[in-house]
Image (cartoon, rainbow, N blue to C red; front, top):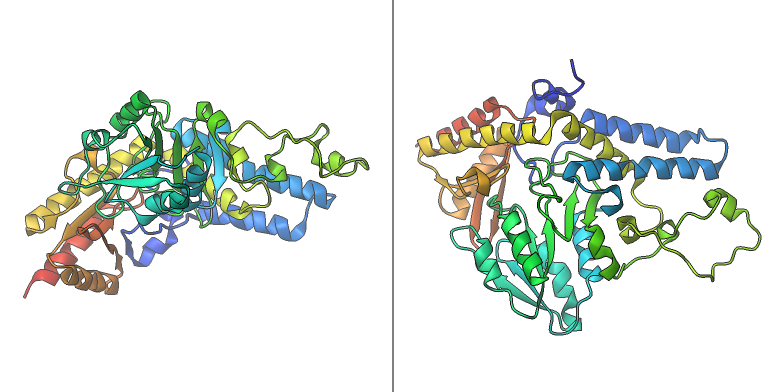
Length: 402
């Protein structure tokens, strides 16, 4: 039997023994494998098994670097297009600082976005960069409505591939096409999609794609990734620089640091890869180790298999909510959603009361709103089963009875 399968994957998540966990969109559960990988790294940090501290450091560097090819496989990118970052926030902020923008340039986004999609661009206001906002309609934003707002001064379209409050999944392929035709940078927050529904950056080209590890990728906190399209890198301004961004000297760093003639003031040759956009120094090594271990589960299960499993759960949830006569806020069509289904009992206060009752029953969900769109947000992931959905539906039914 394979190490990981959809039939047995719940064994990787012991927290599921005493609760119904339907809130991966907030923060998901780390697997046994990811936790074990971090523990192995920490034991290595404690014991220093290498013969010298220098070799110890290099070994830890190699363990962190193993996350890059695993991430690249996840989105069908090249390893040199992957930077390891602290979070989606970190990745989006790097993109905003790296793209060459001038006074009068405009950034386009929509009113459904999580605040972090807007904040990095708002920080550029002192440089004269301005924001345009497309209004959603019935909780959706069409590619045509975004394309229709692109002006000669629009330099960037920033978008979440899946919106955090209602789970709307945009037509990323159409946005990609519009942006390439107009020479506009496309910056994508994929944190609410990857791990539930795959993205292939070869089939759907984007310039930047940021994703944290602690939601749908089931990794421990503090490490995600930033994809940067290789062809775009020469036009960018890396906002950070550190010695690990420099090309490895002949003989390696160990030999370099033992060379008497080295000087800090000299010409530096930086790597021509996305890791040039990392901090360039000591980063979250345990987080990267945990991320790499967690991604092995996704590679083993297969992203398409995971997506089909999640769609089956969300279809069942939508049908159950319809049977109860509950308002569904999320789009119904599969091509417009991923793992999030949001519903509403009416007023925000009613939704909050339902959430509190569900939490008391150890059924974990959230209430989320943006621009008056939202409600009770349910996140169905690969470790969930129809029984989890049925438990939620039964609880909602009981809550609504007089």
